Image 1 (cartoon, one colour):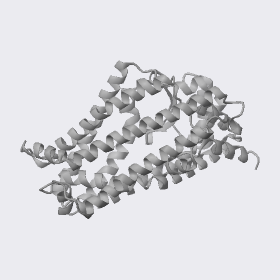
Image 2 (tube, one colour):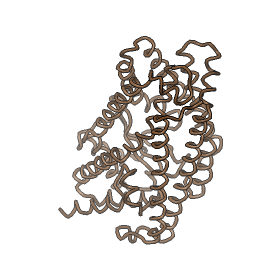
Image 3 (tube, helix red, strand yellow):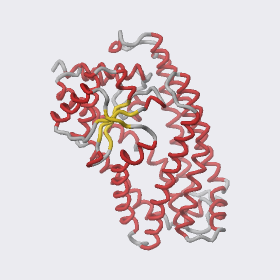
Image 4 (cartoon, one colour):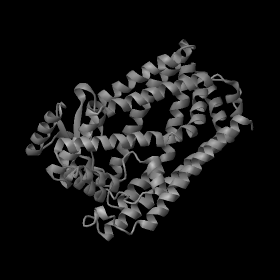
Length: 419
């Protein structure tokens, strides 16, 4: 049975505070959109009509309410399983197999991962074939959806098993310094995954071919040379077989570094707009944003591992949640659950930094192209095509947005052209 003590009280306060803040921010955002969503922002006048604006509002409201329902379901299940001893029973069931401790850890975490995946299936189905289909985005088939789910689950499970085996083996072999060795393994693991993803994992889901438009391909290479960036090839991906959403991105490390353009982006934007979008992405590389994000993740992982190391053998942690015996794989699970609500409140710190990176990349694109007109025009098309929210609540945007709100971002580009 769980113990109602100060640790449980702190956890529940953090847990419900997180849930309340998430619900409150979502409510503010939807209410703000319903209040102002019928008015086309001046900066979008002539680019977005009333009908499209209404679809933008409805898409955001529908998605927001659905996400709130999903969060409530997941939080409810987690709290129910914690307080009723389901996880304690599950640990006892795994122990009854009398496996090696590392294998027990893999089974415990692997089955939890699979269970979580199954619980999310109804929500993913409704989001894909309900919401996304209703608003004209989803183009996937039931067979393709099932294939994607199966492949992504198997890949994630394999990676999870490999990493967890190393984690709990190191915890057993080096009890005093495992956190350092695991951090080193995690760092190498992350870099290796980033390196192999474009050439081994992504092709399992999509077909990547060199950009077919030779004129555009030549201009992209010229732009990259001008910006001092090298990539072996520029690819287009058949993203349109799943969704009509548009995007472009850089991926990979070292020799696997490449530029990828969605086929939907190529069909919806002219060459000048595509080049301006790519100049923005190049700006992230030239400003070392990718390196800084990797470094931040590494530092976060180090702090988290130190926290787990400090708490994983704390008897009160196990007693509080009803476990009679301290076991490393259960301890890691409990520490992660305990810390997650507190870590949620770091979201705005990361959002503020991410928005600064986006502004720097916009400035780089302006300086590289020589004008912000094309990027601003591309953003307007992206907003329209993706039914973006043009009226986010300021507090919601401050807390969550990794990019400045579109009206602010386009206005900043216009100001650059006047200075």
